[in-house]
Image 1: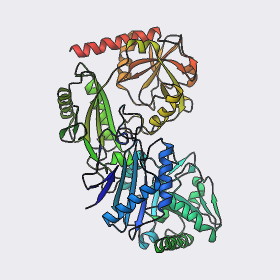
Image 2: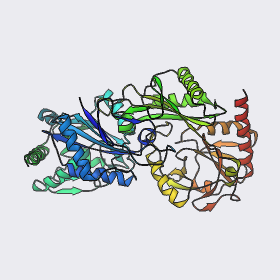
Image 3: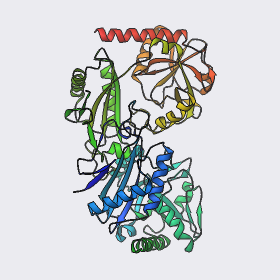
Image 4: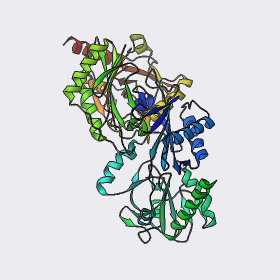
Length: 277
Length: 277
Protein backbone atom coordinates (compact mmCIF):
# COMPACT_ATOMS: atom_id res chain seq x y z
CA UNK A 1 0.00 0.00 0.00
CA UNK A 2 1.53 3.30 -1.12
CA UNK A 3 0.12 6.59 0.12
CA UNK A 4 -0.04 9.80 -1.91
CA UNK A 5 -0.66 13.27 -0.50
CA UNK A 6 -3.16 15.39 -2.46
CA UNK A 7 -3.77 18.99 -1.32
CA UNK A 8 -4.75 18.31 2.30
CA UNK A 9 -4.78 14.56 2.97
CA UNK A 10 -3.01 11.26 2.34
CA UNK A 11 -4.83 8.92 -0.04
CA UNK A 12 -4.42 5.23 -0.75
CA UNK A 13 -3.25 3.95 -4.11
CA UNK A 14 -5.93 4.51 -6.76
CA UNK A 15 -7.75 7.11 -4.62
CA UNK A 16 -5.15 9.83 -5.25
CA UNK A 17 -6.89 11.71 -8.06
CA UNK A 18 -7.37 15.12 -9.62
CA UNK A 19 -10.41 16.30 -11.54
CA UNK A 20 -10.08 16.14 -15.30
CA UNK A 21 -10.34 19.94 -15.59
CA UNK A 22 -6.98 20.57 -13.92
CA UNK A 23 -4.78 22.85 -15.99
CA UNK A 24 -1.86 20.41 -15.86
CA UNK A 25 -4.04 17.84 -17.63
CA UNK A 26 -5.74 20.27 -20.01
CA UNK A 27 -2.83 22.55 -20.88
CA UNK A 28 0.28 20.85 -19.51
CA UNK A 29 0.61 23.68 -17.01
CA UNK A 30 2.42 22.40 -13.94
CA UNK A 31 5.77 22.23 -12.17
CA UNK A 32 7.32 19.43 -10.20
CA UNK A 33 10.50 18.27 -8.56
CA UNK A 34 11.91 14.91 -7.68
CA UNK A 35 14.19 13.92 -4.84
CA UNK A 36 15.58 10.63 -3.67
CA UNK A 37 15.55 8.81 -0.37
CA UNK A 38 18.13 6.33 0.84
CA UNK A 39 17.55 4.37 4.05
CA UNK A 40 14.28 6.31 4.40
CA UNK A 41 16.19 9.61 4.51
CA UNK A 42 15.68 12.30 1.88
CA UNK A 43 18.88 13.47 0.16
CA UNK A 44 19.57 17.19 -0.28
CA UNK A 45 15.92 17.96 0.42
CA UNK A 46 16.43 21.72 0.89
CA UNK A 47 18.01 22.05 -2.56
CA UNK A 48 15.02 20.32 -4.15
CA UNK A 49 12.49 22.37 -2.20
CA UNK A 50 14.21 25.61 -3.23
CA UNK A 51 14.12 24.62 -6.88
CA UNK A 52 10.49 23.46 -6.69
CA UNK A 53 9.34 26.76 -5.17
CA UNK A 54 11.39 28.71 -7.68
CA UNK A 55 9.85 26.80 -10.63
CA UNK A 56 6.36 27.50 -9.31
CA UNK A 57 7.10 31.20 -8.88
CA UNK A 58 8.43 31.50 -12.45
CA UNK A 59 5.16 30.08 -13.84
CA UNK A 60 2.82 31.94 -11.43
CA UNK A 61 1.78 28.64 -9.85
CA UNK A 62 0.67 28.67 -6.22
CA UNK A 63 2.04 26.10 -3.77
CA UNK A 64 -0.45 26.05 -0.90
CA UNK A 65 2.18 25.50 1.82
CA UNK A 66 5.43 27.04 2.96
CA UNK A 67 8.66 25.08 2.42
CA UNK A 68 8.85 23.88 6.02
CA UNK A 69 5.31 22.50 5.84
CA UNK A 70 6.01 20.70 2.54
CA UNK A 71 9.10 19.21 4.16
CA UNK A 72 7.00 18.02 7.08
CA UNK A 73 4.52 16.30 4.72
CA UNK A 74 7.45 14.66 2.89
CA UNK A 75 8.71 13.22 6.18
CA UNK A 76 5.17 12.01 6.96
CA UNK A 77 4.99 10.37 3.52
CA UNK A 78 8.33 8.63 4.10
CA UNK A 79 7.18 7.37 7.51
CA UNK A 80 3.79 6.14 6.24
CA UNK A 81 5.13 4.38 3.14
CA UNK A 82 8.41 2.94 4.42
CA UNK A 83 10.02 2.61 0.98
CA UNK A 84 13.67 3.05 2.05
CA UNK A 85 15.11 3.52 -1.46
CA UNK A 86 12.64 5.75 -3.28
CA UNK A 87 11.89 8.76 -5.43
CA UNK A 88 9.54 11.44 -4.11
CA UNK A 89 7.73 13.64 -6.58
CA UNK A 90 6.29 17.04 -5.65
CA UNK A 91 3.77 18.37 -8.16
CA UNK A 92 2.02 21.74 -8.29
CA UNK A 93 -0.51 22.40 -11.04
CA UNK A 94 -2.38 25.33 -12.59
CA UNK A 95 -5.52 24.14 -10.80
CA UNK A 96 -9.19 23.80 -11.73
CA UNK A 97 -9.32 26.77 -14.07
CA UNK A 98 -12.87 27.92 -14.91
CA UNK A 99 -11.83 29.19 -18.36
CA UNK A 100 -9.50 26.23 -19.00
CA UNK A 101 -6.58 28.57 -19.65
CA UNK A 102 -5.78 30.85 -16.70
CA UNK A 103 -3.97 29.44 -13.66
CA UNK A 104 -5.93 29.56 -10.41
CA UNK A 105 -5.13 28.16 -6.94
CA UNK A 106 -3.15 25.08 -7.80
CA UNK A 107 -3.41 21.44 -6.82
CA UNK A 108 -0.54 19.98 -4.86
CA UNK A 109 0.60 16.34 -4.89
CA UNK A 110 3.34 14.34 -3.13
CA UNK A 111 3.99 10.86 -4.47
CA UNK A 112 6.53 8.19 -3.60
CA UNK A 113 7.81 5.24 -5.64
CA UNK A 114 10.51 2.61 -5.12
CA UNK A 115 13.67 3.56 -7.00
CA UNK A 116 16.69 1.49 -7.85
CA UNK A 117 19.80 3.51 -8.60
CA UNK A 118 22.39 2.16 -11.07
CA UNK A 119 24.86 -0.29 -9.49
CA UNK A 120 28.64 -0.33 -9.96
CA UNK A 121 28.36 -2.69 -12.92
CA UNK A 122 25.98 -0.29 -14.70
CA UNK A 123 28.37 2.54 -13.87
CA UNK A 124 31.33 0.64 -15.36
CA UNK A 125 29.43 -0.23 -18.53
CA UNK A 126 28.17 3.33 -19.09
CA UNK A 127 25.48 4.39 -21.57
CA UNK A 128 25.08 5.05 -25.28
CA UNK A 129 23.48 8.31 -26.36
CA UNK A 130 22.58 10.31 -29.46
CA UNK A 131 22.37 14.08 -29.92
CA UNK A 132 19.20 15.88 -31.03
CA UNK A 133 18.51 19.50 -32.03
CA UNK A 134 16.12 20.87 -29.45
CA UNK A 135 15.86 23.56 -26.81
CA UNK A 136 13.39 23.28 -23.93
CA UNK A 137 11.06 26.21 -23.19
CA UNK A 138 11.81 27.76 -19.79
CA UNK A 139 14.98 25.67 -19.31
CA UNK A 140 15.52 26.97 -15.75
CA UNK A 141 12.05 25.76 -14.71
CA UNK A 142 11.22 22.14 -13.94
CA UNK A 143 7.87 22.18 -15.71
CA UNK A 144 5.88 19.06 -16.51
CA UNK A 145 6.48 19.57 -20.24
CA UNK A 146 8.37 16.48 -21.41
CA UNK A 147 6.55 16.15 -24.71
CA UNK A 148 9.77 15.95 -26.74
CA UNK A 149 11.62 13.78 -24.22
CA UNK A 150 8.86 11.18 -23.96
CA UNK A 151 8.30 11.20 -27.72
CA UNK A 152 12.01 10.69 -28.45
CA UNK A 153 12.22 7.88 -25.89
CA UNK A 154 9.93 5.84 -28.13
CA UNK A 155 12.43 6.02 -31.01
CA UNK A 156 15.48 5.43 -28.79
CA UNK A 157 14.12 2.17 -27.41
CA UNK A 158 13.93 0.68 -30.89
CA UNK A 159 17.56 1.61 -31.52
CA UNK A 160 18.78 0.37 -28.10
CA UNK A 161 20.05 3.87 -27.27
CA UNK A 162 19.91 4.88 -23.61
CA UNK A 163 19.34 8.62 -23.80
CA UNK A 164 19.32 11.76 -25.96
CA UNK A 165 21.36 14.92 -25.50
CA UNK A 166 19.82 18.19 -26.71
CA UNK A 167 21.78 20.80 -28.62
CA UNK A 168 20.86 24.08 -30.26
CA UNK A 169 22.99 25.79 -32.95
CA UNK A 170 25.86 23.38 -32.26
CA UNK A 171 25.89 24.12 -28.48
CA UNK A 172 24.97 21.20 -26.23
CA UNK A 173 22.67 21.77 -23.27
CA UNK A 174 21.27 18.79 -21.35
CA UNK A 175 19.43 15.48 -21.46
CA UNK A 176 15.65 15.51 -20.96
CA UNK A 177 16.22 14.48 -17.32
CA UNK A 178 19.96 14.88 -16.68
CA UNK A 179 22.93 17.24 -17.04
CA UNK A 180 26.11 16.60 -19.04
CA UNK A 181 29.79 16.92 -18.09
CA UNK A 182 32.90 16.38 -20.17
CA UNK A 183 36.52 15.85 -19.14
CA UNK A 184 38.95 17.20 -21.71
CA UNK A 185 42.10 15.39 -22.81
CA UNK A 186 44.10 18.02 -20.89
CA UNK A 187 42.20 17.25 -17.68
CA UNK A 188 39.56 19.96 -17.22
CA UNK A 189 35.94 19.36 -16.21
CA UNK A 190 33.48 21.30 -18.39
CA UNK A 191 29.69 21.59 -18.24
CA UNK A 192 27.18 23.84 -20.04
CA UNK A 193 26.27 27.00 -18.13
CA UNK A 194 23.20 28.24 -20.04
CA UNK A 195 19.82 26.97 -21.23
CA UNK A 196 19.76 24.09 -18.78
CA UNK A 197 17.98 23.00 -15.65
CA UNK A 198 20.34 23.50 -12.75
CA UNK A 199 20.52 19.92 -11.54
CA UNK A 200 21.10 19.26 -7.85
CA UNK A 201 23.54 16.42 -8.59
CA UNK A 202 25.24 18.75 -11.09
CA UNK A 203 25.69 21.31 -8.32
CA UNK A 204 27.13 18.74 -5.92
CA UNK A 205 29.62 17.59 -8.58
CA UNK A 206 30.65 21.20 -9.20
CA UNK A 207 31.27 21.52 -5.46
CA UNK A 208 33.28 18.28 -5.21
CA UNK A 209 35.27 18.46 -8.43
CA UNK A 210 37.72 21.35 -7.76
CA UNK A 211 39.62 19.10 -5.32
CA UNK A 212 40.36 16.80 -8.26
CA UNK A 213 40.59 18.97 -11.41
CA UNK A 214 39.87 22.49 -12.71
CA UNK A 215 36.22 23.22 -13.53
CA UNK A 216 34.57 25.51 -16.09
CA UNK A 217 30.90 26.27 -16.72
CA UNK A 218 30.50 27.55 -20.27
CA UNK A 219 29.04 26.84 -23.73
CA UNK A 220 30.27 23.55 -25.20
CA UNK A 221 30.18 22.57 -28.86
CA UNK A 222 29.33 19.14 -30.22
CA UNK A 223 32.94 18.81 -31.41
CA UNK A 224 34.26 19.40 -27.89
CA UNK A 225 31.82 16.78 -26.63
CA UNK A 226 32.91 14.14 -29.12
CA UNK A 227 36.61 14.82 -28.60
CA UNK A 228 36.36 14.53 -24.83
CA UNK A 229 38.47 12.05 -22.86
CA UNK A 230 35.49 11.21 -20.64
CA UNK A 231 31.81 12.18 -20.65
CA UNK A 232 29.21 11.59 -17.96
CA UNK A 233 25.68 12.55 -17.06
CA UNK A 234 24.42 13.58 -13.63
CA UNK A 235 20.88 13.14 -12.34
CA UNK A 236 18.98 12.51 -9.15
CA UNK A 237 18.04 8.96 -10.10
CA UNK A 238 21.34 8.02 -11.74
CA UNK A 239 23.90 10.03 -9.72
CA UNK A 240 26.90 9.99 -12.12
CA UNK A 241 26.76 7.75 -15.18
CA UNK A 242 29.51 7.52 -17.83
CA UNK A 243 28.60 8.12 -21.48
CA UNK A 244 30.67 5.73 -23.58
CA UNK A 245 29.19 6.28 -27.03
CA UNK A 246 27.75 9.38 -28.74
CA UNK A 247 26.12 9.19 -32.17
CA UNK A 248 27.94 5.90 -32.75
CA UNK A 249 31.36 7.34 -31.78
CA UNK A 250 33.17 5.71 -28.89
CA UNK A 251 34.27 8.04 -26.05
CA UNK A 252 37.56 7.30 -24.29
CA UNK A 253 38.14 3.58 -23.87
CA UNK A 254 34.45 2.70 -24.11
CA UNK A 255 33.81 2.27 -20.42
CA UNK A 256 33.88 4.37 -17.24
CA UNK A 257 36.92 6.68 -17.22
CA UNK A 258 39.37 7.27 -14.40
CA UNK A 259 38.27 10.77 -13.38
CA UNK A 260 34.56 9.95 -13.72
CA UNK A 261 35.17 7.06 -11.35
CA UNK A 262 36.97 9.32 -8.86
CA UNK A 263 34.08 11.81 -8.93
CA UNK A 264 31.55 9.00 -8.60
CA UNK A 265 33.31 7.70 -5.47
CA UNK A 266 33.42 11.19 -3.98
CA UNK A 267 29.72 11.58 -4.66
CA UNK A 268 28.95 8.25 -2.96
CA UNK A 269 31.03 9.43 0.01
CA UNK A 270 29.06 12.69 0.16
CA UNK A 271 25.80 10.72 0.14
CA UNK A 272 27.08 8.50 2.96
CA UNK A 273 28.09 11.60 4.97
CA UNK A 274 24.68 13.19 4.52
CA UNK A 275 22.98 9.96 5.58
CA UNK A 276 25.20 9.65 8.66
CA UNK A 277 24.41 13.15 9.90
CA UNK B 1 -25.24 19.17 -13.44
CA UNK B 2 -22.65 18.60 -16.14
CA UNK B 3 -21.58 15.08 -17.08
CA UNK B 4 -18.08 14.09 -18.16
CA UNK B 5 -17.14 10.84 -19.87
CA UNK B 6 -14.00 9.13 -18.51
CA UNK B 7 -12.78 5.94 -20.22
CA UNK B 8 -15.96 3.87 -19.95
CA UNK B 9 -18.66 5.83 -18.09
CA UNK B 10 -20.28 9.20 -17.60
CA UNK B 11 -19.45 10.89 -14.29
CA UNK B 12 -21.05 13.80 -12.47
CA UNK B 13 -19.21 17.05 -11.89
CA UNK B 14 -16.39 16.59 -9.38
CA UNK B 15 -16.39 12.80 -9.84
CA UNK B 16 -14.68 12.93 -13.23
CA UNK B 17 -11.11 12.27 -12.17
CA UNK B 18 -7.82 10.72 -13.22
CA UNK B 19 -5.18 9.28 -10.91
CA UNK B 20 -2.26 11.58 -10.17
CA UNK B 21 0.17 9.24 -11.92
CA UNK B 22 -1.27 9.86 -15.38
CA UNK B 23 1.43 10.81 -17.87
CA UNK B 24 -0.47 13.94 -18.96
CA UNK B 25 -0.21 15.24 -15.39
CA UNK B 26 3.32 14.04 -14.74
CA UNK B 27 4.95 14.75 -18.09
CA UNK B 28 2.45 16.86 -20.03
CA UNK B 29 2.01 13.93 -22.44
CA UNK B 30 -1.46 14.14 -23.95
CA UNK B 31 -3.43 15.21 -27.01
CA UNK B 32 -6.84 16.79 -27.24
CA UNK B 33 -9.27 18.43 -29.59
CA UNK B 34 -12.09 20.87 -29.15
CA UNK B 35 -15.27 21.26 -31.14
CA UNK B 36 -18.28 23.49 -30.79
CA UNK B 37 -21.99 22.81 -30.60
CA UNK B 38 -24.75 25.21 -31.67
CA UNK B 39 -28.38 24.35 -30.92
CA UNK B 40 -27.11 21.09 -29.41
CA UNK B 41 -25.56 20.10 -32.74
CA UNK B 42 -21.82 19.52 -33.14
CA UNK B 43 -20.19 21.55 -35.92
CA UNK B 44 -17.79 19.89 -38.38
CA UNK B 45 -17.42 16.94 -36.01
CA UNK B 46 -15.72 14.64 -38.54
CA UNK B 47 -12.96 17.19 -39.16
CA UNK B 48 -12.26 17.40 -35.43
CA UNK B 49 -12.31 13.64 -34.96
CA UNK B 50 -9.87 13.16 -37.83
CA UNK B 51 -7.47 15.69 -36.34
CA UNK B 52 -7.79 14.21 -32.83
CA UNK B 53 -6.98 10.70 -34.04
CA UNK B 54 -4.10 12.01 -36.12
CA UNK B 55 -2.61 13.89 -33.14
CA UNK B 56 -2.81 10.75 -31.02
CA UNK B 57 -1.13 8.66 -33.68
CA UNK B 58 1.74 11.15 -34.05
CA UNK B 59 2.49 10.90 -30.32
CA UNK B 60 1.92 7.11 -30.02
CA UNK B 61 -1.10 7.70 -27.77
CA UNK B 62 -3.88 5.12 -27.79
CA UNK B 63 -7.51 6.19 -28.13
CA UNK B 64 -9.51 3.24 -26.78
CA UNK B 65 -12.40 3.63 -29.30
CA UNK B 66 -12.87 3.92 -33.02
CA UNK B 67 -13.99 7.28 -34.45
CA UNK B 68 -17.62 6.21 -34.85
CA UNK B 69 -17.79 5.13 -31.21
CA UNK B 70 -16.25 8.42 -29.99
CA UNK B 71 -18.83 10.25 -32.08
CA UNK B 72 -21.58 8.22 -30.47
CA UNK B 73 -20.32 9.13 -26.97
CA UNK B 74 -20.19 12.80 -28.01
CA UNK B 75 -23.84 12.65 -29.06
CA UNK B 76 -24.69 10.96 -25.74
CA UNK B 77 -22.82 13.70 -23.87
CA UNK B 78 -24.75 16.39 -25.76
CA UNK B 79 -28.06 14.68 -25.00
CA UNK B 80 -27.28 14.19 -21.30
CA UNK B 81 -25.96 17.70 -20.67
CA UNK B 82 -28.27 19.80 -22.84
CA UNK B 83 -25.90 22.77 -23.15
CA UNK B 84 -27.00 24.02 -26.59
CA UNK B 85 -24.07 26.42 -27.14
CA UNK B 86 -20.99 24.62 -25.91
CA UNK B 87 -17.44 23.47 -26.37
CA UNK B 88 -16.64 19.76 -26.25
CA UNK B 89 -13.15 18.66 -25.36
CA UNK B 90 -11.75 15.24 -26.25
CA UNK B 91 -8.62 14.31 -24.31
CA UNK B 92 -6.35 11.27 -24.67
CA UNK B 93 -3.41 10.89 -22.30
CA UNK B 94 -0.23 8.85 -21.98
CA UNK B 95 -1.93 6.81 -19.24
CA UNK B 96 -0.88 5.43 -15.87
CA UNK B 97 2.73 4.77 -16.77
CA UNK B 98 4.55 2.46 -14.32
CA UNK B 99 7.93 4.12 -14.98
CA UNK B 100 6.43 7.63 -15.12
CA UNK B 101 7.91 8.20 -18.58
CA UNK B 102 6.73 5.67 -21.17
CA UNK B 103 3.20 5.96 -22.64
CA UNK B 104 0.91 3.02 -21.91
CA UNK B 105 -2.80 2.47 -22.66
CA UNK B 106 -4.14 5.99 -22.40
CA UNK B 107 -6.98 7.56 -20.48
CA UNK B 108 -9.79 9.08 -22.49
CA UNK B 109 -12.01 11.99 -21.46
CA UNK B 110 -14.94 13.87 -23.04
CA UNK B 111 -15.96 17.13 -21.36
CA UNK B 112 -18.52 19.77 -22.20
CA UNK B 113 -18.74 23.42 -21.15
CA UNK B 114 -21.03 26.32 -22.04
CA UNK B 115 -19.40 28.55 -24.64
CA UNK B 116 -20.30 32.03 -25.77
CA UNK B 117 -18.95 32.95 -29.18
CA UNK B 118 -18.08 36.60 -29.94
CA UNK B 119 -21.11 38.69 -30.99
CA UNK B 120 -21.25 41.13 -33.91
CA UNK B 121 -20.17 44.02 -31.71
CA UNK B 122 -17.05 42.15 -30.62
CA UNK B 123 -16.42 41.30 -34.29
CA UNK B 124 -16.70 44.99 -35.30
CA UNK B 125 -14.37 46.11 -32.51
CA UNK B 126 -11.69 43.49 -33.26
CA UNK B 127 -8.74 42.61 -31.06
CA UNK B 128 -5.29 43.95 -30.19
CA UNK B 129 -2.33 41.59 -30.37
CA UNK B 130 1.43 41.50 -29.96
CA UNK B 131 4.00 39.29 -31.69
CA UNK B 132 6.36 36.95 -29.82
CA UNK B 133 9.33 34.84 -30.96
CA UNK B 134 8.35 31.23 -30.40
CA UNK B 135 7.79 28.00 -32.27
CA UNK B 136 5.65 25.22 -30.83
CA UNK B 137 7.03 21.68 -30.70
CA UNK B 138 5.07 19.32 -32.98
CA UNK B 139 3.06 22.18 -34.54
CA UNK B 140 0.85 19.79 -36.54
CA UNK B 141 -0.21 18.00 -33.36
CA UNK B 142 -2.81 19.35 -30.93
CA UNK B 143 -0.89 18.35 -27.81
CA UNK B 144 -1.76 19.56 -24.33
CA UNK B 145 1.47 21.57 -24.17
CA UNK B 146 0.38 25.21 -23.76
CA UNK B 147 3.11 26.13 -21.30
CA UNK B 148 4.20 29.20 -23.30
CA UNK B 149 0.67 30.26 -24.24
CA UNK B 150 -0.66 30.14 -20.70
CA UNK B 151 2.46 31.83 -19.32
CA UNK B 152 2.26 34.67 -21.86
CA UNK B 153 -1.44 35.15 -21.16
CA UNK B 154 -0.51 36.30 -17.67
CA UNK B 155 1.57 39.16 -19.07
CA UNK B 156 -0.95 40.10 -21.76
CA UNK B 157 -3.75 40.60 -19.26
CA UNK B 158 -1.76 43.26 -17.45
CA UNK B 159 -1.22 45.12 -20.74
CA UNK B 160 -4.85 44.74 -21.91
CA UNK B 161 -3.67 42.85 -25.00
CA UNK B 162 -6.04 40.19 -26.34
CA UNK B 163 -3.66 37.65 -27.82
CA UNK B 164 -0.13 36.87 -28.96
CA UNK B 165 1.04 35.82 -32.42
CA UNK B 166 4.10 33.56 -32.61
CA UNK B 167 6.89 34.09 -35.13
CA UNK B 168 10.21 32.39 -35.75
CA UNK B 169 13.07 33.99 -37.72
CA UNK B 170 10.74 36.77 -38.92
CA UNK B 171 8.12 34.30 -40.26
CA UNK B 172 4.74 34.39 -38.51
CA UNK B 173 2.99 31.13 -37.68
CA UNK B 174 -0.07 31.15 -35.43
CA UNK B 175 -1.65 32.20 -32.14
CA UNK B 176 -1.53 29.76 -29.22
CA UNK B 177 -5.14 28.78 -30.02
CA UNK B 178 -5.93 30.32 -33.43
CA UNK B 179 -4.69 30.76 -37.00
CA UNK B 180 -3.85 34.04 -38.73
CA UNK B 181 -4.94 35.44 -42.11
CA UNK B 182 -3.98 38.69 -43.83
CA UNK B 183 -5.59 40.52 -46.71
CA UNK B 184 -3.07 42.47 -48.78
CA UNK B 185 -3.66 45.99 -50.07
CA UNK B 186 -3.97 44.47 -53.57
CA UNK B 187 -6.74 42.14 -52.42
CA UNK B 188 -5.22 38.70 -51.83
CA UNK B 189 -5.87 36.45 -48.85
CA UNK B 190 -2.68 35.00 -47.36
CA UNK B 191 -2.13 32.57 -44.51
CA UNK B 192 0.96 30.69 -43.23
CA UNK B 193 1.35 27.19 -44.65
CA UNK B 194 4.01 25.70 -42.37
CA UNK B 195 4.72 25.18 -38.67
CA UNK B 196 1.08 25.62 -37.67
CA UNK B 197 -1.82 23.60 -36.41
CA UNK B 198 -4.21 23.08 -39.31
CA UNK B 199 -7.27 24.77 -37.84
CA UNK B 200 -10.71 23.52 -38.86
CA UNK B 201 -12.07 27.08 -39.12
CA UNK B 202 -8.94 27.96 -41.13
CA UNK B 203 -9.76 25.14 -43.53
CA UNK B 204 -13.38 26.28 -43.91
CA UNK B 205 -12.22 29.84 -44.66
CA UNK B 206 -9.79 28.52 -47.28
CA UNK B 207 -12.72 26.68 -48.88
CA UNK B 208 -15.05 29.70 -48.82
CA UNK B 209 -12.62 32.45 -49.74
CA UNK B 210 -11.83 31.73 -53.41
CA UNK B 211 -15.36 32.92 -54.35
CA UNK B 212 -14.38 36.34 -53.00
CA UNK B 213 -10.62 36.79 -53.57
CA UNK B 214 -7.46 34.89 -54.56
CA UNK B 215 -5.89 32.80 -51.81
CA UNK B 216 -2.28 31.80 -51.07
CA UNK B 217 -0.85 29.56 -48.36
CA UNK B 218 2.83 30.44 -47.84
CA UNK B 219 5.42 31.88 -45.45
CA UNK B 220 4.55 35.41 -44.30
CA UNK B 221 6.95 37.92 -42.80
CA UNK B 222 6.20 40.29 -39.94
CA UNK B 223 6.50 43.21 -42.40
CA UNK B 224 3.80 41.71 -44.65
CA UNK B 225 1.62 41.27 -41.57
CA UNK B 226 1.98 44.86 -40.42
CA UNK B 227 1.45 46.28 -43.92
CA UNK B 228 -1.74 44.30 -44.48
CA UNK B 229 -5.03 46.00 -45.34
CA UNK B 230 -6.90 43.63 -43.03
CA UNK B 231 -5.86 40.93 -40.58
CA UNK B 232 -8.02 38.36 -38.82
CA UNK B 233 -7.72 35.24 -36.69
CA UNK B 234 -9.73 32.06 -37.07
CA UNK B 235 -10.56 29.62 -34.29
CA UNK B 236 -13.24 27.20 -33.20
CA UNK B 237 -14.37 29.37 -30.30
CA UNK B 238 -14.05 32.74 -32.07
CA UNK B 239 -14.86 31.87 -35.70
CA UNK B 240 -13.34 34.90 -37.52
CA UNK B 241 -12.14 37.84 -35.45
CA UNK B 242 -10.49 40.97 -36.91
CA UNK B 243 -7.08 42.02 -35.60
CA UNK B 244 -7.02 45.83 -35.48
CA UNK B 245 -3.72 46.49 -33.72
CA UNK B 246 -0.38 44.65 -33.81
CA UNK B 247 2.52 45.65 -31.54
CA UNK B 248 0.85 49.06 -31.12
CA UNK B 249 0.45 49.61 -34.88
CA UNK B 250 -3.10 50.11 -36.21
CA UNK B 251 -4.19 47.77 -39.01
CA UNK B 252 -6.47 49.19 -41.70
CA UNK B 253 -9.02 51.61 -40.30
CA UNK B 254 -8.81 50.15 -36.77
CA UNK B 255 -11.99 48.09 -36.95
CA UNK B 256 -13.38 45.13 -38.90
CA UNK B 257 -12.45 45.43 -42.59
CA UNK B 258 -14.74 44.96 -45.59
CA UNK B 259 -13.43 41.60 -46.82
CA UNK B 260 -13.09 40.16 -43.31
CA UNK B 261 -16.76 41.05 -42.83
CA UNK B 262 -17.72 39.34 -46.10
CA UNK B 263 -15.85 36.18 -45.08
CA UNK B 264 -17.40 36.29 -41.62
CA UNK B 265 -20.91 36.43 -43.11
CA UNK B 266 -20.13 33.53 -45.44
CA UNK B 267 -18.85 31.53 -42.50
CA UNK B 268 -22.02 32.23 -40.48
CA UNK B 269 -24.04 31.11 -43.53
CA UNK B 270 -22.03 27.89 -43.71
CA UNK B 271 -22.69 27.24 -40.03
CA UNK B 272 -26.41 27.83 -40.56
CA UNK B 273 -26.40 25.43 -43.52
CA UNK B 274 -24.66 22.71 -41.49
CA UNK B 275 -27.14 23.16 -38.65
CA UNK B 276 -30.12 22.98 -41.03
CA UNK B 277 -28.98 19.69 -42.56
